[in-house]
Image 1 (tube, rainbow, N blue to C red):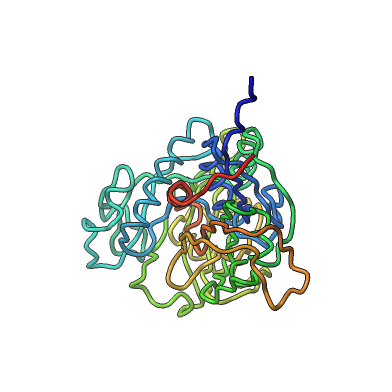
Image 2: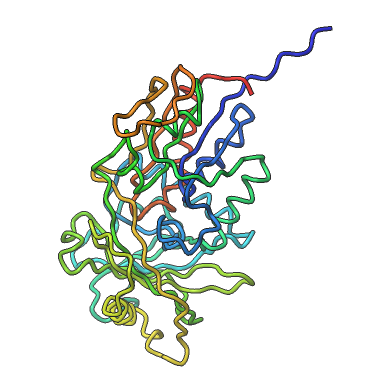
Length: 373
């Protein structure tokens, strides 16, 4: 009797192990048709690396910008998915207050149907210096626990992790091979990946403070909107307070922040830290109690943004991909590879991660060809 024919599967290489790459791998690895491998210079255990943004993120759902149907879908999917993780302790729900200028039509805010328990704040709920605001329930995760959890889930499914610096799109495509799939989740690396070199990609410098104060237990922020002045107009100040889960049912709170476009500086600034504390204390006076507020750490990271918005797009490229800039670039076999780009999410990587990953998976499903296991 002849042996049964080997199952037809497709090799998928995810380039990048930030929250987008990990979440894409999580969604794709649910499907037995795909053999998933993650290749990255920085892996989820590299939580002190400033070479990728995911360890330093606020990692909650925050209202940003204006309505966009595609972004709304991504964020609604992610918000609901984070909510499902609350019973396991991986996510934390918190009450929220977001403050707007007087005259804003609060009842028409685009995210009213995305969040839970949306309401317009009473005057008595507005801190001094604010004119209007809304309340709702939001959700957050803690990168130091969430990224290792994603990796553990993937390892349990047989996903392979390879630590490797990849210099070019051609080198990455060769790893996927003919009829394979390459998911390009390189973040800021999309700007320097030879053969891609997306000049629309740029950094947004962020600086935050992590504190422990049991009385600072709600998410608060001032408006982050496209209608506001340019991010660097006032030194790149953005004011937000994000409680996040910690082991044992406790929580810490991240205070922010800075939003400095085209700034590659990853060094700590004491002046920025003082400004963050002062602005956040104006919203949450409990922070002024030095005895009750313990400063845990300072974070500086670069958000991987892209002019024109995130790129989630599929294209099929011929192999081998050659570059005039690399004489010894790995060539591999001839054929075609499906490349699905997923980068440029800026400050919204966490809050768009599950929705964007589902869209990536739908692109892979629609365009991938099987190759032998």
